[in-house]
Length: 231
Image (cartoon, rainbow, N blue to C red; front, side, top):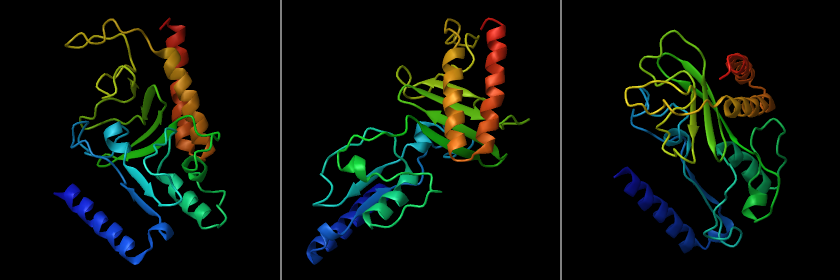
């Protein structure tokens, strides 16, 4: 019902613009602030770093300026909306903004772009802080160590998004025993984790997220211990 209501009212808005002859003078941006996994990932239904929560719709329409039906493959986020609208308005984009203008991408230009998507998250209730980095192939989630996680999945998580796009198999610590023997023959992922942590640290430093940098450094020490143990 909620989706149908949104669809109906967006349609009313578009029709009103068409009737007023304003479609080519109006930018419409449709997006959501978060997704939802309905508590499948833990006690909180939306505040996690999984795709169910962080991957949201973003549709931009400007007839006569943006070609209809195009899909942007590089990583974009809500942080890019303000720079984009400022760019279209011909206004200066402040350097302190974390996002970038999407205008070059929407114009079909090939420009250097971010290699991954960085997420800052706080799980409500016990106030569990997380940092995540997502590439095309991998998702690494770091969770700040706390004494009680109230049934939350794990401290740190690693997902192979090529083989496991639903993020069902956390392979951060492998091989390991579990009741279904899913991870017994999975090789260690130390090199992959180390590479992703370095990437996460760079992304955190770019936006002055000191906690993200600290969590990355802590994890790098853990990876060095793994290597020393032959893992």
